[in-house]
Image (cartoon, rainbow, N blue to C red; front, side):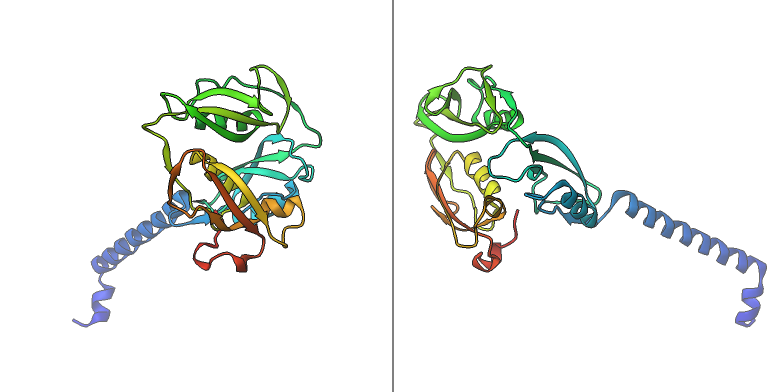
Length: 265
């Protein structure tokens, strides 16, 4: 029996049709599952910092993410309406369609209420300051049984009571405990990190921001916001005492940033 005769057999035809139908269903299911789960379709979150909302919407559309303004604060020297903070941060890997929450700069400083931070951990207090619209300044360590437990909250060296009304963006210093048995930390890797992210990493490592050097490419406050670290002191991964100052140099020139760490995160 030749191949043509076999293919013309109704039983063979039905089997072949069934196989083709099943294969089609499998292929369709795979495509639909891929579209639903966005498997393997992760993208890099753009840097919306210092953009207007119109610019941010365009960048978000091109990057296949969504933006949502969830808060506003007042930042001196930053242009009104510009994006100040974003979550997730620039450079993080997320699925297509992910919503990025933005904090924008207001035209005038709004008043906020100083929260009660005594008894909080340093990280909890920092998160509460950010949520309220205030800025963490220095971490002032004093001997105590519990490390990073907030003991006092201050503005300009003077204790400030919870409930005090302040201008959004006011800098608050925290007096925190430091146990003799738990007083060391490791310096973070700041090279290639954007200015605000570098400050966050420094504070989250129980360290203070020391001297900042902006090179000749940084001419405005907007430039400083987008600038990245190309030198840091002490170097990354050094064990130091909590409260130590981290100094870093920043630039908007990518050629100055070491190639292996030039991606902003």
